[in-house]
Length: 290
Image 1 (cartoon, rainbow, N blue to C red):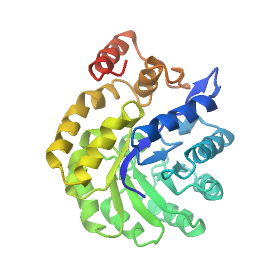
Image 2: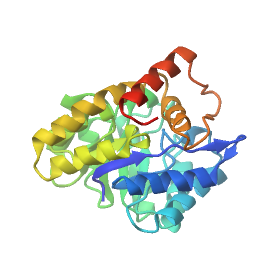
Image 3: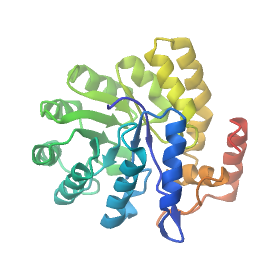
Image 4: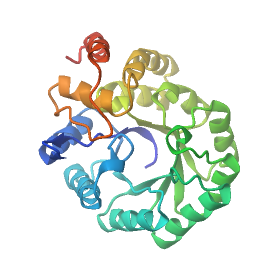
């Protein structure tokens, strides 16, 4: 389940409100193009600006629309353990297949604090849990030895590693071998992580070009390394374009240019500069996405 080309799906807004119809259409777009799992309410889904009611509704819509065709891994993390527990309980009751939990941001817990945060939620909610390490967003880096301790807990079954440090990611794979699925949290290093023993990617690029990323992972998994490398190298300009500005602003702008959603993001995020929009358009044209 915690493997393959998985999309960290955007949350579309219209006039400041959740655009349910657009979200359902995006989910079908992903299913039609070979995506292996959908992750609502992650960083790319602007979870930090969703109300609790909106957060829960996005998870529910995703599960309703997917109808069991692929796994739904609901984002349920918070820097407040009680809040993370509440959101994870909701994901379980809504029948999500798993929960993705980011390391607590801003308050910068110690490694021991991280361990007990995840342990509390995992022991109270019987749902598969995917850890999420992204120190560039949270200000705290969960070390391989902490991940290895958490891997001893039965329902902690994976980690989205977005430290960008291949040495650290490889060490997580080494110390957790056979106990934890490790997936890339950065599109830029999807193929290196797979080659090191990872099982997939939770992708931003898949929002815009899901077929490209699913083909990359599928080719690798069937042992066609040359084709996987071709798709990986082909993906790199689009990877760069998705981070011309803060994620998910470029992804949502691209989807708006493609006619799939409105371009709205919530403050404190803001629309792309005109110069970067032109760069993004040029990239999308290269991929024949416009």
